[in-house]
Length: 253
Image 1 (cartoon, rainbow, N blue to C red):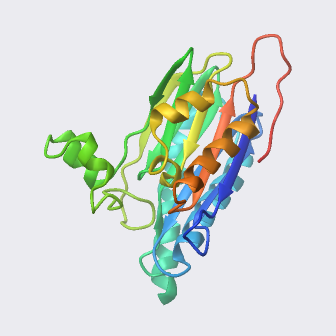
Image 2: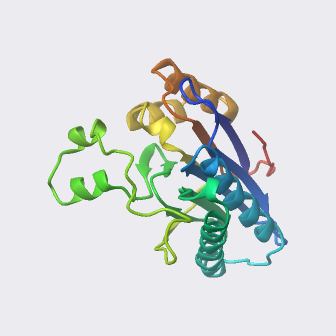
């Protein structure tokens, strides 16, 4: 297995409110986490870093070893982190209203366990097929689902950034968890909307389908987003499952 991540501030933002990392637990199971923070002049970067760092540390101390245990761990720990961020925002006036999206995946027993809240996305490229495997928790997505607007309308909707769910904003949260098979040579891509608002899904698929290295694929995607304006921070994690017969390895972005 290879994990590579990179975060870029983009062309328009002064600071980077995205935060990402990957962590290995006591049973050698990998968890990758990506958060896109929001709120206040520094609240967003505090919320996203808190979520990734605290969850990562907790994961490293954990002994979960199957998909069911990982799912329970995600639901419990992400809810706990939600309360921690909420308390911090109430404690400090300059952090008031901060929050963050979260998308995370663990690779266990040939399965991806994916958790998400907000509009940071997970995509799976497997056997030539490419699909978004998370659902955006956004006002615009709700309008699309109800048939009020089309997918084309959604691309440039003025309220595109309004989230219906996020971490650190309300006492109770609803976390989506999905479990999917992980086949040899699969690619799981986690990203913030700084990528998906600039680069089409088909274009992401085309890049992942090349024989380039994981680092080259991520660099190309970030370059594409920046070439089109780089309106937001761009963060990507790429998890590449090992091909049968090759040694497992850990990469770092």
